[in-house]
Length: 441
Image (cartoon, rainbow, N blue to C red; front, side, top):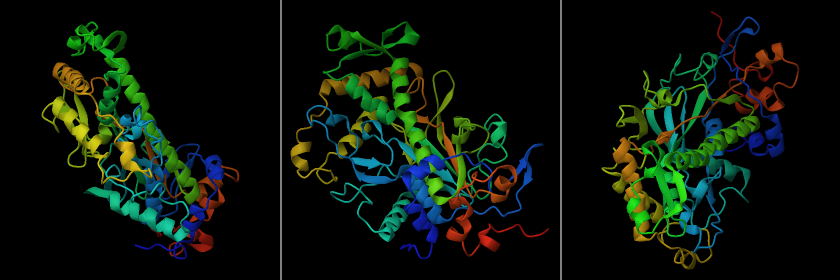
């Protein structure tokens, strides 16, 4: 597995690339090797072969996007706040309550994959995965992380939409083309939704959640209002609650895409972030298989994505018989992280964890009552957002230097882009380190 910098000199360039330089280098560079731009203004057909990313290039982008960075510090009062945490691990992006409900799917010429990063744990007491290590050790650990979490979902490039309505017209010429790697973060909204309910319905908070679609009646919690367990003055509608959940979670996809964008600069690759795909078509709810997600039917006959069977499943039916069972399954996952054999960041972890309160039994019952009300009334959970949510995509590719030299002044590509093939693919590079040209027809 060892990857030495002497065999891939570009790897050393990438690992040493200045952070602020990467930020200010960031631009969308949409034209890759092998592509054609059908435009009266930009009339261009690439003379180069479409060269896919190497394993090392792809690995660096994946782990930059969503890699495990060790253990979070959990620097909260154990008695107030620490019970909100879902995991002790931390990623390259921040996550509310450390829930990490977003996983990265990606597709290339060889196959369609996901990184199963949620289940990965660092070594005991490993606060950071790279700090203080040699460049060679850093490279080996990043590649190892990629290989251990990479799960093949199907051979070959994902059959994603190529026309409307699934893909906007202005993205059809270059999205998911040969030689590219398309990254698609997908968020399990039920993970943090249920976790958040344990906060709002706890004895400390006691929010009253109402159903605006049903005239503002209590969302399965009237008995708790009648008993005084919930506060009628702390009133929140289902729509407002779910907007809070969505706004907390959709930023995770943006963080992942931005991390990949910054890594593109360090590697000297082209690419860009876009929203041209419609989510249900990407996930498989249109006329193509997409990422192969399962869709469930709600009471009104509409369908919504609930998971990728066996790999990435929401806490809701059909993966659980009832929403009460889904809440139990969530609690099992969450509180398993507090068991003694799971790595934690503290010098005295037992003393810290033993001070963390578990949810009161009546809070558990209120969470179940609310979830069962939503699903029982509308045949789906959540109500207004999808259990599996997708919005942003980012594509990586080798930038076509001739296009940018022909239509732009110097500076459209950086030295990292212009030297990329000489540093990363010397065996494939042409004269002067140029990309390989198409064979004459």
